[in-house]
Image (tube, rainbow, N blue to C red; front, side, top):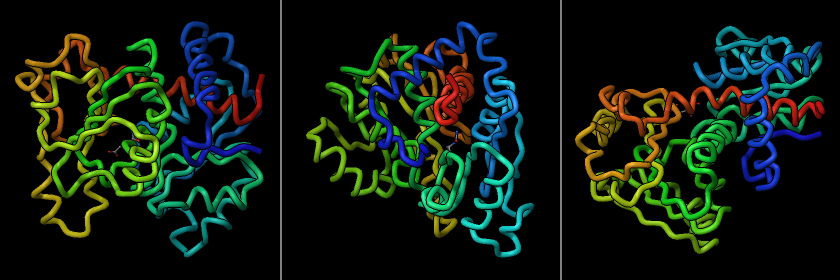
Length: 304
Ligand code: NCD
């Protein structure tokens, strides 16, 4: 049985197939409307979410399946001290597939060891977020026709931003991708990513604090929120939270075919004036998230 805990567990071919399925779902939704009839998805969210949880639920409904779950740890037996392992064994008795978000890095991996049904990591602490990455990849592929030769700027909280970590891993497997890592000094990507992914694979990357200087070369700009909930002290967060605020003015020297992505939620890092720019792609990205999750559910449930 297959789980999705880390995007690197999926081959490039498997990702291409998922993108192909998602594109077919977008073109022919009626073909898929009954594919998961009688199946149940459980969404176990020990941490807040709008898009990830609701897109999983909408995905399962659009496949003709049903959904159960909880959206905060406080309303589950975790509040009484139940372990993740016991929760998973219990939910496996009710559901055919589980999407789980947890504040602890590695919790979905631990859960997968005890689970009799497929587990999908819907975000584990500051670590990984593979289904956001699938969403990002579908968006980039639809907008750019592929991944090779792209220069991708990742901007904001590269230290705690789990979407950034998964996306760097996934993009590192395509040809001649260049990474521009834009962050304040304190929010640079973790060392393990630098050594295990970027340097090991001899990828082209630069680290900079200057978004405007980096702008002209970018094909993709991936903005992120400073991850308040992962800071040890409020003052550090307050000092760093507005490090980058993308405004129309800062896009003056950007390519005409730049695509601006953001996993959302946005706090302050993209001014709403940018929403009207044709290069702003983050709400399209939200829509894509449902379709790629439909494709993923079909794959993990082995529905033909
Ligand atoms: C992201 C997350 O939860 O990691 N959001 C999402 O799932 N779309 C990004 C974030 O919270 O900043």
